Amino acid sequence: MPMSRSLVLKLLSGVIVFGAWEVAGRIPVSYAFPTFFESMAALVDMTVSGWIFEAYVETLRPLIIGLLISAFIGIALGLWVGLSNWFDWLVSPIFIVMQAAPLAALIPLLVMVYGIGLTSKVFVVCIMAMPVIVLNTAGAVRNAPTNLKEMGYSFLGTEQDIILKVIIPSASPIIFAGLRLGTSAGFIGAILSELKITPTGIGDIITYSRSIADYPSMYAAIFSIMVLAVLFLNFLERTERYFFAGNVRGYASD
Amino acid sequence: MDTHPIDMTRSATNASAAAAVSVRGVSKNYGQVEALRDLSLDFPRGQLTSLLGPSGCGKTTLLKIIAGLLQPTEGEVEVNGKPVTGPGPDRAFVFQDFALLPWATVLRNVAFGLELRGVRISEREAIAEQYIRNVGLAGFEKSYPHELSGGMRQRVGLARALAVDSEVLLMDEPFSAVDEQTRRKFQEDLLGLVAGENKTFLFVTHSIEEAVYVSDQIAILLPRPSRVSEVIRPSGLRTRNVSDIRRDPEYLDIVDRIWASLRSYVE
Ligand SMILES: Nc1ncnc2c1ncn2[C@@H]1O[C@H](COP(=O)(O)OP(=O)(O)OP(=O)(O)O)[C@@H](O)[C@H]1O
Ligand SMILES: [Mg+2]
Image 1 (tube, rainbow over the protein chains, first blue to last red):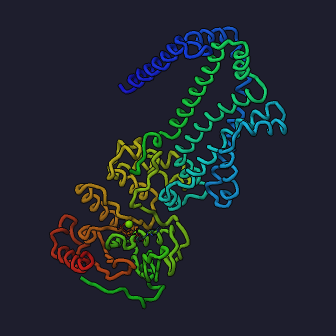
Image 2: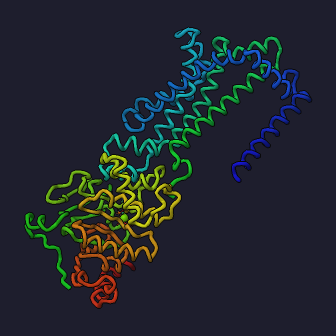
């Protein structure tokens, strides 16, 4: 029965969090903090009117493009960095700096170079998402167990076999962890770019609702993007479980 | 009971005709650590040679050099008269630490050697299933390594090496984690395998009894830096019935002699 028990626990934690939100909204903690039910009502309104769907079409475009670029290029770069010392020396510092850079300060620069359109927003998502993907992938590849690589060579694996059938699968838990962190950071980047570059999509709902003091709508938008991020992360987890069943359930090397 | 120190003057052609694997003057240093020093040994074709020696004396190192996974600092290894430059289809390795892929099922692990050789999936799985049955793991084809006991994992590694059907089997303590009953059964199976197939077995073990029971030739290694101190051939035992070997006076005699020469290092 562990399935139904974990479901009960999830529901319970949901009730506690949303209950606390409702209570905080009713006290109220701040004039600008609506209750849980007000926010949900606003969310239903937005859904019925279709406003939120239009917004997501706008928001998801740079987000998905940016995440796909970050995932593919990030993993490819990470593999290369992990496999070649020379490339590691050349590329790693860039991503370490990128990870530490204050993004908000970079946005004006990006806008100056790439304008206020889609390109800049995709860049923001990539800057947020890519470093952790690259660095995680590289680390995992570098630390792939020597004994498994030796085993592969002894059974006549080619360099390519070892990379595809030993190194990548053994690195996959950490690569996926990087993808999850990168995805969360990408969501932050997408919203940040809509707040800092041009208000479109969800960023627009947030900015606009705040300007007319429609706080329930503002929180509904924030809530919806959080739900979406969680769903997305769940999807990633499922993908990992599907491809690397033995990895997720444990390790043979005690 | 014939014992002879290794004869270094034997001519190369003569040696390579009889020996499937010959190791000549191999030294191996890991930085400051001198693991092997000027080690020479011939492994006769179709026979089982045990490497017996204290822990850390370089048995795994020697096996990996023969497998082509490590470069010797000095000296060379020949397999079937050809110098070893890397891994080859004529050798299969059973790893001391099993080296199983944790994300792959037992079936895929056992078939992995064949997979890397490009054998079609249906064919290699049929072969793998056969060897899974042979090592007594039928019914566990779909299990993952972490769901198996240590001894079962070890048998997966064994089946993987057997499945590629190499001439030379490099077995690094292949029975160390199985229980005593299974161990005895495997030792008998191994004797059957040595007798029935024209394969050459290199067998690392810590157990004097096991070495005497299964070997055509036992090489006793000294502690680091390792050389062969003695080669013992329990030849009389190989003609006995497997169930009588442990009662044979020659068996007991050789076990005692090996213990006598090793005990000085275990103070
Ligand atoms: N990669 C390595 N780097 C440095 N030293 C090593 C390395 N591998 C082995 N050694 C050293 O070489 C020596 C021989 O190691 P090896 O694994 O061959 O011993 P072994 O005879 O197989 O021991 P055991 O019976 O415990 O398995 C050891 O003293 C070890 O410290
Ligand atoms: Mg060893």
